[in-house]
Length: 318
Image 1 (cartoon, helix red, strand yellow):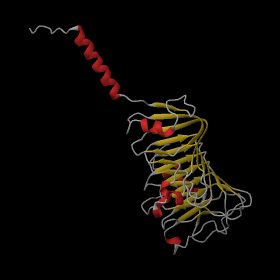
Image 2 (image 1 turned 60 degrees about the vertical axis):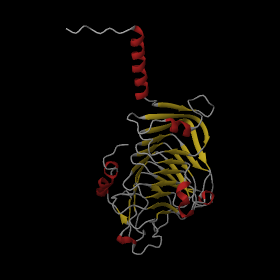
Image 3 (image 1 turned 90 degrees about the horizontal axis):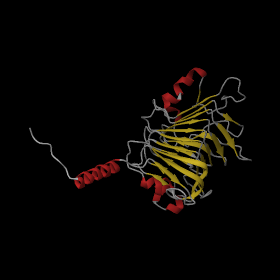
Image 4 (image 1 turned 30 degrees about the vertical axis):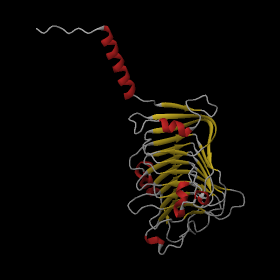
């Protein structure tokens, strides 16, 4: 029989310390607090994001205390599985626009106050604002990740307020307020809007989808309310940024400021051959689609199952 090996007390202590240290390195922080007054882990949102573990297995939550945060925020591609939660009135504001960025024809895409490049991101109770004013393209929120969701958020801007990108990427908005002027919801992602308020601040266009040919769905607005500022009389539901644009409004509430034609073709030849624009107007509504542009569609109640959240988002539940 081999005699049992004995260990000295110092060795045991060192071994235990090594085990504890290894455990510490294998774990990571999953809860952060940001407070502008310095009472949290960080005083800036970006600092908390930059401290997060890359590609974490466990979800990470950043809680942001009430306040106005003047900063540009980027959720990098490696910041997956992240939630940012506003506690009270949280405003993230930044001033950036096309001319100020000055990076050529694609300058628009660098103007976002908040940029979400990661998959599996969620935000709740945040106001995201581009304060540049009516000076041209100026994004408040840019989303390029897949499975990104936003609840009870306010997106404030003018032209190009909300940019949604990523071929086949799925994005979801619920109980959000989105305001702007020209094409203030635009891009090529698949996005579902539930019970949102869309506020048009100019006679212009709400949406400008650039849906890829490979995507079955572009933008779907379900039971949303379309409002307009005082004096606004001609707002279009959308126009095609690219030839396979797809946009659908289902049971939405809107007033007489919506142009009778409903949609604009943006100079596209034969838009009916590739663009899909449609509405479902419930029976008994004061609105009708009788004077809509000829190549748009009016859906029936039996069509609604084709545009359920589950089907549009391909089984993903936000």
